[in-house]
Length: 542
Image 1 (cartoon, one colour):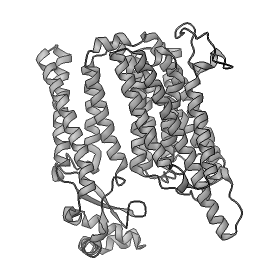
Image 2 (cartoon, helix red, strand yellow):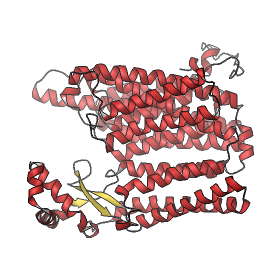
Image 3 (cartoon, one colour):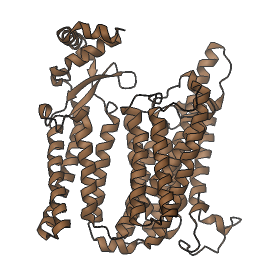
Image 4 (cartoon, helix red, strand yellow):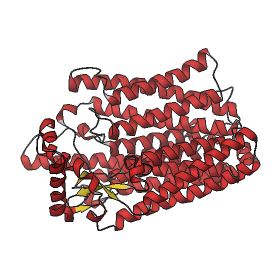
């Protein structure tokens, strides 16, 4: 992919003519990537030699180290934009290298662990030794998130070795960190896929998806930076980031925060069992004190921000601009307080039953009846009163087994963190904006990078669709079935196709192309998360 982004007329950079020992000068700039990938392979070899997960660092610990490295690298890259320093550049580059190293190592160690666990089962049962390739970790959304973040980190490392593209890490690496945070909330339990999905096309298909998504993330980062370099006002960016944050706040907890009947409430799903790893999530929402009101307050501040910045952009009203920035900063504080309170309440709230709204009993009673194998007609015949009574009896007898976990609503919590991050970055961009724009490379270079990463993403998504169709035919006996995730991936591919088409045939470069790239990446995010959690389908195993 590194060759794909070279453009002699636009993005050429001074080449290093020196040699380090036997290493050719052309490879010196790729040394961080070589070290990260080679080091992860070496660490995996040591894990195999250790002979068991109890004698080696866990894949979860390695993932947390990757998260820390990505965040550290992002801070150094962002600081370097405002206060250029060779030290910050080097620290940012090597922190990113550490992030890719730990990220890949976490995924590879997880592969070895899954194989050893299954091997132990086969040994006890006297069965045939399992095929090592079968247990490549692409079984759930946690595995895909690890690979997605690695794809983003690797693409950033391959591109940002050029000095003019170091800015990428300031935006792409925080996004990779958010993906790892989502993985942390989902939980890293190792699961096995149903036999119908056991095919060697699975790792090919999902691996292609992970790397393509990672390159798409870098394309998205380049598009956002292009808009900033091209002179788009940060107030206009703030309007779009505020609308995104409002959509997140409105949709979490099943639209309870702004709904008239449940205004100001936020509910976390209840678990039943001994712990989140072995427990089961129930369709019962536990109202968390203060969280809903903090989210409602941040939503109100964001609405005010949108109105004031809209007035400023329409009438050049400086008082509206000043008050808009004040409200934006207050909304950031409110969002941060809401997230912190949510985490704190989930960790400390013990009286779970007392915070369950009885208005949920009828729907929960329907769920209990369905779990007992009753047909929909039989459930409807029971009536609301009997369903509520069954739910109340269940909660009375088994209420002591209910508990809360951060794994109960991983997408919601990650979405809130993403909204907070978007607001934070707009505030950062609003600080000494002209200095930041001057530190960025020419917009033609950024546009060229956006175009080429978009082209790589288009090709990757094409391979994704083809390998997915072959896998589907082996598993389900048909190449295409208009499943929700199939359709989402197809729409995202068409969008990137449109992105390339309008550039080539209509000459849409610059802002129009950047807007296209942003929309296309949002469709990828919906395919990655929304389909897995919101829409039913054959890919719901994720």
